[in-house]
Length: 155
Image 1 (spheres, rainbow, N blue to C red):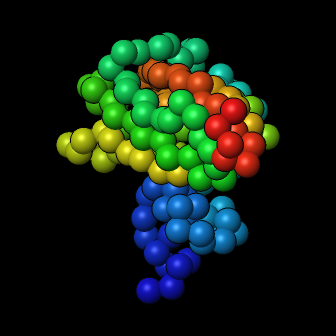
Image 2 (tube, rainbow, N blue to C red):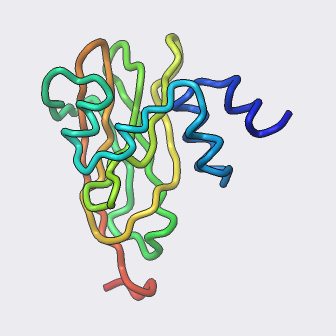
């Protein structure tokens, strides 16, 4: 199966996230069904949520658990994960506040599955990282500050 066929056959956001994680060309991902170009060009959590369909500001939730390192020695590969215990979660996204384009990844969560995802994101500098979950017509977030060190020297 060719990459473009794979991307066309899957969920748009999931295919995009898989494409980014596997190093597939962004040109293929941008043609995937469900690609939300506007959302991936946003500069903030609020703008990303709005571009993804939020009608009100996301609210912080303790039922959305974000895992990210306190210190990332290599900003090019920062492992993040999120688990939503919010009923009817249908999407989980990662937003890196100080990146040029804040929305780093978006995953569609099929009904009846665990709302748990993980991926690597790139961070140009220390920043707040958000997990953003859609449940019904509401958006929820969890946040953690990740410090990116220079040259892996830890400070």
